[in-house]
Length: 256
Image (cartoon, rainbow, N blue to C red; front, side, top):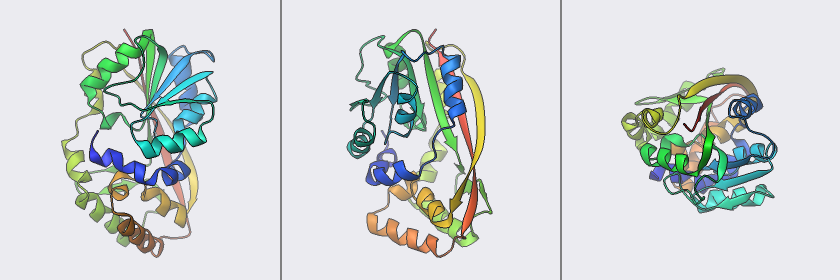
């Protein structure tokens, strides 16, 4: 797993507290499309702090969370009572062959070795098992900066601070080299991937906007003192209230 992906463990509690939940409509649609029931056995892969895990646990009787980062996994276990929590990666999933009815992945598949992950997903899924990839889009990145769905937009000086960190952290270079993660499914043991989108909005205070934007990988990878200095600088620039537009994108497929 890339080093930037592992930076989230440094801020696991903050990440869990401020990152948007996944649209319930997207989870319902995945459940319906993959023919899941309350008794289905589900794996949450790269489960992070458990944001998606807890939503799944409210729908299914048995949820197994797999997460490689020790700090993230500690928060996950502490806040997700009744869920089995395992250390493991997408490339080496610690589950038996054909042992789950579906695998969910929230905002993480782009960090995986796609080819190895697809092979592992097919291995652990039962025949005709399902895969749901979820993405919460509330900002987007480019070669030299980021854009957001905030209304009003961030002040230009605040945006410039974030863009500078985005480039210096190596995230811009990593993004430029990153292939479309769904290419890994072009050939292999899955049927065609379907895409659906579920939009909503969330009202945030200025301080909540700062908390949210400082959980992205480029900022999370900063030394703690530098990250805190950035947060103070951003707090002095942002306004009192913002509307954040969020689109939960669902990609789903069945094992052939």
